[in-house]
Image (cartoon, rainbow, N blue to C red; front, side, top):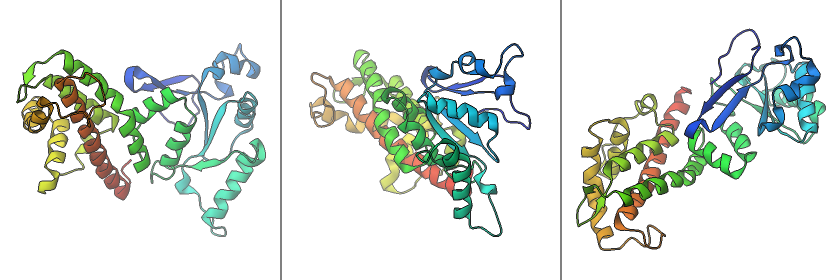
Length: 308
């Protein structure tokens, strides 16, 4: 997300996204980015480094002396550090295998400098190498609350991350189900009322959790088999603006009768939940499962063509 260039950045830059911009990446300048009135010893306090949850050390060639000093200090302060060698696709040597070369780089720039308990991730934005492992490393070092937000809002590069998104997205479904229970605006059959606009917002928000942007959805064609009809409905609701209600209503009406009869205990473990709440919760769970399928299809197409 950060701008990149030939020269090092000389100021602190903030890149925020997610729910209410709740996930923030800070692009820290090198030591030479400090104002003239400050020195290296001031850097730690000047940029409030101790308040950061994770520090990521990224380099593409050699790790300079200043950076090594900074991350040794971070480790001494018991902060979580992830070491990354970027542009891994340009690592090459005629006389040494790729595996041997990577082991040598890791040993020289990480294990010898910071200790054998630290490892180096090799990442390439061109080929997608290491992106899934990087996400797993970040998630493993976050508190449970931040981890949940990270799963909901970061783009997935692996099936395991998509599965984590499924679980984290249930909070979104619970929120919209509560809204629907309080505003029975639209009859959907058998005496059941739900807030259809809220349902559509829920589906689109779940789609955003799975990073199903218009550009990524354009990689997919509708699945024409009868088995995938529901897949197509959710896919088209994600793509459509004004016509989303007409696409969604026939699907939700198909399930309304079982909730009118109160047969929803196995779907929604909430005591006293009304039919509107329960039907919305059920549809939200179906939306999560379907968005996971759609995201997996998109991811597989991206991986096959390296269009990250």
